[in-house]
Image (cartoon, rainbow, N blue to C red; front, side, top):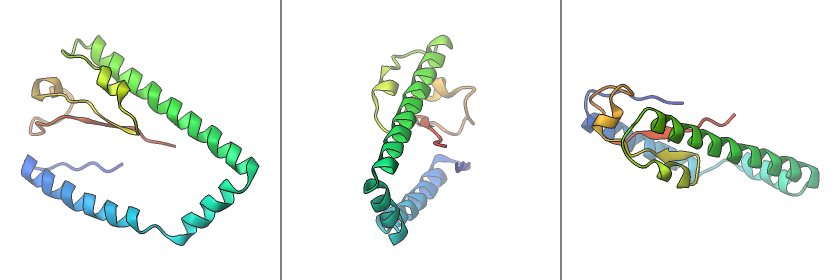
Length: 121
């Protein structure tokens, strides 16, 4: 997990831009080792079954975490409809909180929506 704290949104956006470029460079040029590992998993029925089960558990964990966040927001009385949290696919979710909704969650200079990032173990 990487946490970036900046003095203002402009600096935060500059850092985000640099990190996106770095991530894109890493993701678009994966090492050959990964391809060999994937091939060995997909060609071995036992490993393929284990991978599918692990993937199913990860998806269930993500869905449960998003449900918990949505329920916590509801219990806190945070105004708004939070169905979009559980309707989003993927390991990240955009919460869409405004400045008032962010009070007590993070520093006041962050004025845009908060992202939910789920750590996979």
